[in-house]
Length: 73
Length: 331
Ligand code: SF4
Image (cartoon, rainbow over all chains, first blue to last red; front, side, top):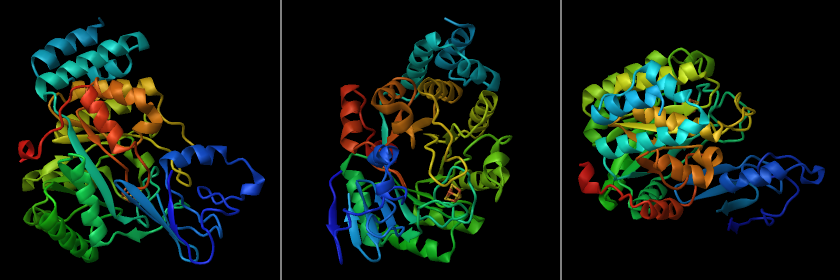
C-alpha cells in the first residue's frame, strides 16, 4: 500500500514495532500481521508503539501518532 | 434437484413468497453438490423480483471507537482491549468522503457512529454534516447511530435521512451470547419506530458469530418478519482483542449457502454484501454471491477495516452486465 507521511521527529514508517499488533519486530512471527494489513490500516506507531488515532475513509485512511505524525494510505 | 429447491422454485420464484424458517434451514443444510443449483435459483429469484440493478453504497465512520457496548465481534467496543482508538471525523472530511462515494456511482452514503445511541454532541455533528453534504453532493444519506428515542427518530426524518441502519446482528435466541449490555428487543424497538416513521429500514447482521445453522435460519426468518428494505450481510472478520478475535472465518461454501438461503427467505429485499466478504470469500466468492442472490454492495473501505478497491467491484459489475442503480430510481 502506498503511504504518504508527515513526520515530526522521525520517519514513522521505519521502526521497531509491528504496526498491526504492536509487538517487537525483532522477535519475528508477524507474517499473519503483514498478510492482514492488506485489508487493515495500521494501529500502532512503528517507532514508539503508541496506539494511533486512525480514521478509515471510503477511499483511504489516516493514522496519527501524537509523537510521530500522520501516515496516509 | 432437491425437494427444498423444487419447493422454492414454485413458492419463491413463481409466487414471490419467501421460505419459512424450516425451508431456510433445509437450504443451509444442502450438500456441496447442490450449492450451485441453490445459488442459481437465488439469482433467478433476485432477477425476477428485484431486477438486474445493483445498489452501490459507501459508508463512513463519523465517530469511531470507544463505544460503551460489548458486542463481542466489535473492535469499536471500549470494553475490550482492541487497538482501535476513539476518533471523530471532521465535517470537511465527511463531505469529501461523500463526494468520493458519489464518484463511484453510489446512490447511498451511510454515516455511522460507534455509540449505544446518539447524544447531543453526535446529533449536532450529524446535523452539520448532513447540511454540508446536501450543499455539495447529490446522494441519498443514510445513518446508523444505534438505539434511538422517538424524538431522535423524528429529528432524523426532519433531516431527510433516507434510510436507517440498525442491525439485529444475529437471531433472538443467540443474541445474549454476543451482546450483554443491551437486548435484541431494544434493537427491535428502534427498528419498529424507524419503520413507523417512514424512513427505509436497513437491518442485517453477521454470519459466523458461533450461531448454529438452526439459529442462522431463525435469524433469516426474523429478518423476513421485519421485512426491511435492505439486509446487509456481513461475515465475521475476527478482530484482535475482541472475544471473537480467535474464531475462524466462515467457510466459503457456508457463506454462499447463507446468501442463497437469505435471498430465498426475502425475495424482494436489497441483499447487500457488507463487511468480511474479502476474507471469507475472496474475489471468486464475491462473483459467486453476486450471481447467487446479492444485489447490492458496499464499495471501498468499511468502518475500521479496508475493502477491495471500488474500481474492482465496479469492473466486476460491468463484466456481469449488472447496471448500477441510478439515483433517480431510488427517490
Ligand atoms: S453498539 Fe455498535 S459500535 Fe458499539 S460495540 Fe456494538 S456494534 Fe460496536
